[in-house]
Length: 69
Image 1 (cartoon, rainbow, N blue to C red):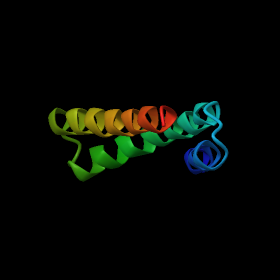
Image 2 (tube, rainbow, N blue to C red; image 1 turned 120 degrees about the horizontal axis):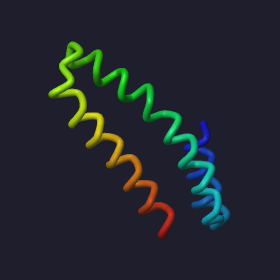
Image 3 (tube, rainbow, N blue to C red; image 1 turned 90 degrees about the vertical axis):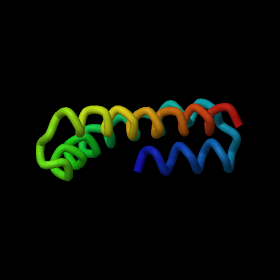
């Protein structure tokens, strides 16, 4: 929810500070993503940790790109 609102305010109103509360939502969402990836990989940390790191990095980098539009 926070992430969607951050994108809306940033793109519609040009509020670059709105990305801050959007990133807060993204950071809250990373926890469940990590748990989901761990469950999908059968609890194999050697596979789930790199995947979760990559997914988290993609999410945060995409927010960085939106913040610099």
